[in-house]
Image (cartoon, rainbow, N blue to C red; front, side, top):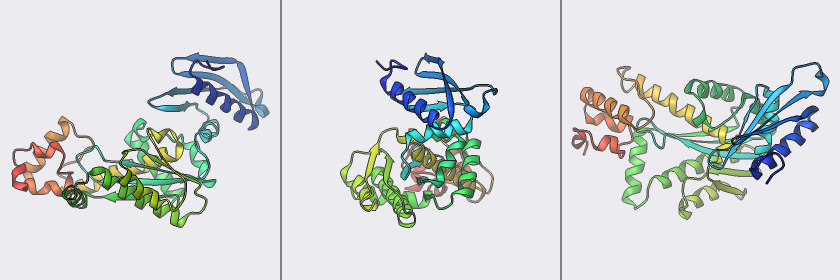
Length: 308
């Protein structure tokens, strides 16, 4: 059992956060430590602002979601998040894999010394953010850190060609993902010095697929980790990838669909209804330009046979 929490991982991380805040000239009120379900909360204040109101901090941990930090102070948030990632970590993640409409997008992002400032934005896994928040954060990253990331977008037409070719070779989507991750990683490694390690959000155990990314790493240590989005470098990559996906949906809606329909993320019943409406207007031939045609959503359309 840990000192701050029954969860030893959480307790250990809270201890590190405590020490980091002390070294950053904060006072931690040890009497305010309180354990709750999945979390530990406490209060701090800057030593130079003894009269100021204390700042509340809550740190949570689950095996499924990893660590998360909640505080209204951006500097404190940045300090604690920095404990989750070593400077020089290149994180890579994807978006659009489970969405019938739009592209597959992969992004690699380098969290170097200059990018630490980004942590003040409250970087977290894009799945825990609203679309508007994702797009706003992406705009800031794009403006301030344009050379810190590489985005690889495989639009529907190219995606469907790749997927068909892979299946004919006995391969699958994981091979396509590995190719995209390898391209994004190689792009950043080739133009930025200081990459000390690479962290990939794990999507397969296939050695052949993973070896493609390892080759792109050019000798830099690489790790494939489940739920890697708790690392700020991977979280930033997930935000950029999701933003690229959302922007692409809008572009396809405006151009290919002439603003007659607005494409949506997901692959549920709402996507089914939208597919029906779009193919009623444009015919099944439009599918290859707007969607991933191997999805069951497309295959169960009444006019899908027209595409074959």
